[in-house]
Length: 434
Length: 168
Image 1 (tube, rainbow over the protein chains, first blue to last red):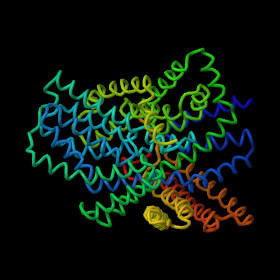
Image 2: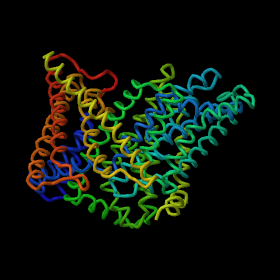
Image 3: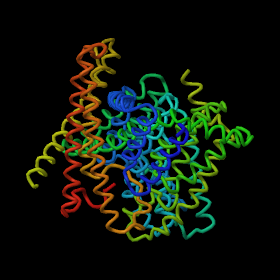
Image 4: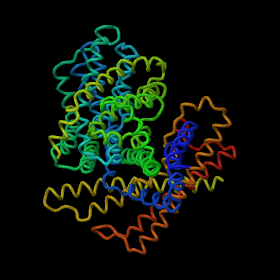
């Protein structure tokens, strides 16, 4: 049996294991381990397992994951995310669709505190859905906006998606974080534009909220100032070269904890629970990464990436044509696979093609993460939709999926813009980090 | 069986405490280093401390991650399968997880023997690498034990110990 045949068999077995609900990490582990054993013997498989496990578990770059997760969890527990929403609400809540726009801005702010889309959707869902219901917002708009706004969590830095991409493709986490800033802001603005357009066409979707006095506006903005300060210090610290991403994560977590103790009534029990939740999420992510580092050498040994690469380049398409095919595959897979698992499974195959074609890996990372975001709200397994459903129990799932549809198309527009203008993604990393 | 369950939950809780404490410690070490650097006195060996503590953070959380049903699985087709098949998959997944973590523990112990033989240690503080490899193996064994027990309990008709709604 040739190496490629073994590789192909491995991929088929992997897909079957995933379909029958074997956890993603376990399925990748089994195929990776036995694949290496089949191609290079059990000694090689055992040695790869031991070295990759310990190397990843003690990786200095990966320290960023638990620390940013901790920062987001503490921000969520202390209600700091609520203050971001309140500030946006006070400023634009009184215009038509303003509450929905405030929700998106709140999601963007929370995204800058947390690397998780799920955390953003859950937290903002708890905060914003009741408010929008109170002001007779159409449930399709209110739930759709929370599910879509939550996806900003993996595009706006700090982003777990970018960290995983960086580790899998050996890219700089700092450069990827910076690359996500402008696309994140662009997407946020496009979301607000989509809401405005929607409420202009159908005014009953998002009636205007109550007007607030200048004093109320000022109070809400002052309330959000410390959280904005944390975001500026952490992301600005990386941007200004003051901190490495790991240091920024520790500084951010430290500041959020300190703010929580001083101003938000954070107790030791809350901090402990947030820390415990953080190590659980870290374990989920890290086990998949370890399994990916077993699967990747197997795929490389089986020459599958080369075979797929030759097949795609053999089509005679332009660089943009190949890119379009790869992104289309991501969009389709995003309907069925969890985004993180999808990235781990596909990058070993697609990334060598991308580098061969001379496509900037940082730019490609932004495009991949954006397609992952789209997967988070794509039927039938859009994770954020289910998260919103868990908060808005009376709204049918079909209504939430209908609500996210305009935002899915908005993301598609953003994807086309980012493909057409790579500078939007590359300007900050190219100017700030050599 | 209840005694084994108490033992597994106790060990899982202890691992989680060590992992959580490790995460807070990591944040403190980096903060002290950053502040110290601003005053021209960075913390010597902070990189060694942070990377080795990461082992406790990552593997200290593995057992509780499984106990809370934290591993991602794709459940799109679950409703299309018969209940008996889904039950079989739940048991098989738990057993597979137990075997995987036992293998991790075994290969890392073998690797630790090499580290002792070669006297491998961290770059600055010269902390023996084997200490952390043994710790990792210990956490992996606790996780394997919890998963194996879950499989046995499930097979014995005691149901799934993981919280409903969170299961992978």
